[in-house]
Length: 130
Image (cartoon, rainbow, N blue to C red; front, side, top):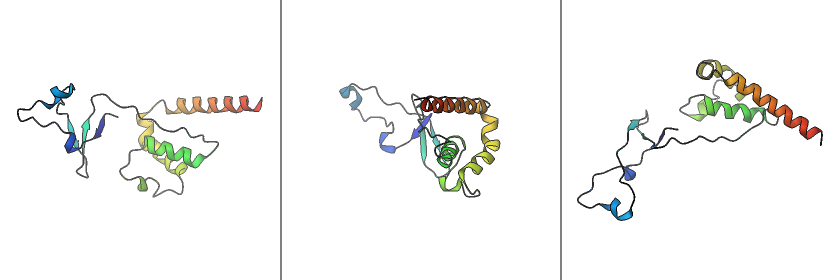
């Protein structure tokens, strides 16, 4: 993630002759690039990009949650409630929207799925031999 929510009280404002940052020993905040979203909220560019962590769901344990997690991760949306509006379940929604959004942007998705299936099969075989 390259952007974070912008809050006015954290914004850089020139001091009025008082160097508050020098007293705390922290480097002074610099104004950062702001973008305005459609709902008029603002986001600012992070100094260091953040890693996005997502929970791991298995397709064999709960396919509905698995496909829903893929939808939320890879398909752009404004309101989460509208992700499944036209589809009976998250699997159908993901498979349909995958062609529109994901296939063009992520050419490695099929290899990632294949590797994921191989790992799951290996884990199942290891558990069966115990």
